[in-house]
Length: 120
Image 1 (cartoon, rainbow, N blue to C red):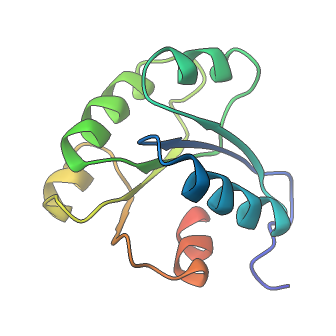
Image 2 (cartoon, rainbow, N blue to C red):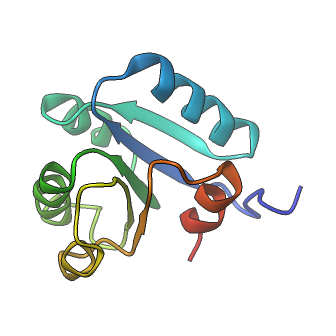
């Protein structure tokens, strides 16, 4: 499977509360060899980060919220080197990247596009 990571790769997947869709995305990433921790913005991600350091943070949130969460996470110990990926349709890609988000994908992105974006 070409999209499988060669080494363990932890993903913090922050979503906006659409549980069924979030579970499906997490399952797909897990099937491709990623360790996935799902959470919603707020206290949940802080609890998740108490147990691991993510290699990548996947933000499936509105652009404004993704920017705020990215700023907060960048200041969290252990996340300084994490790669940030946003999945949203409502933001200016250049502005999001200026906030430290490495890649912006549209919500209609394919699984293959998402898997490619997770790795630098």
